[in-house]
Image (tube, rainbow, N blue to C red; front, side, top):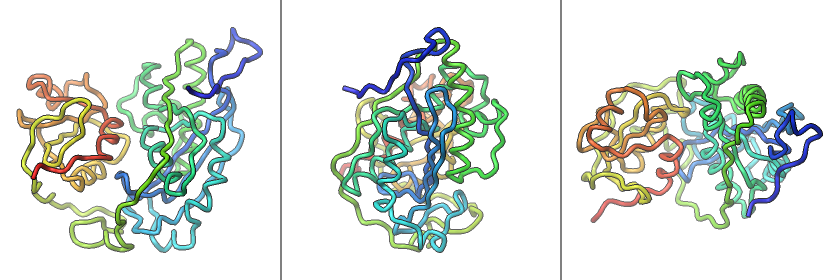
Length: 328
């Protein structure tokens, strides 16, 4: 059962009494999207019940491994070398989260990364509920062209200064969340809160050594991404994805529309997990990933025609954590 995170307000006619009493707007930058990737920077803006900023906090984190897509987050191994380890900032991070609803853009990703870091440190993050601002924008029916943070920010007139910098992303999200929260309160909209279940056990797989991703076929720690052809998937296509079951190596995955995480990075992680990233959709496609299943894109239309399973980006992120090996 969830802990009570609500509080009465002095004027229930002006503000829903069932809304949470405080929020922690979070952004983390990571070495990648897989279950063994690490947090390299984190920021938290603490907000009160009405979305007003109380304070903010930011830290770099030494992942003890290659930093991954430097061209996205800009954090090199040299920058992170003297940063604290996650276990060194875990207590301060926890104090910022304690008793609050975690708010993030594509919150399932941020929560999973945080939960895994705490499990590695043999601790639990004091978070019981999360709120995804993508889900909230859908509840509010905001007229956004896509689900990117920059689009949500532009809708509310929030100016972004450094995209993919944890502190600035958290600031932008906090400023966009405040009017979203007020609109929800005015319309008596039920907030799309989700339960957070901390991990209690963790076993690390061997991590790539620092600098290993700079080699052929891997991440290149540069400020730009060279065009390259993806290697052929070595596994046969096992068929379509079935709801409730894991993805399996060899499955053909196609993407359609905008994503909150860089598309190339999503495709890279799918390829690394043993999936076949398809540029088009056919009867052989195992799964379509899209945040807008009602759009009229050619891939979405074909998915309807062929009966191809469809999941959104957040669900795909969860499935990507544990891809089943190909049948021997």
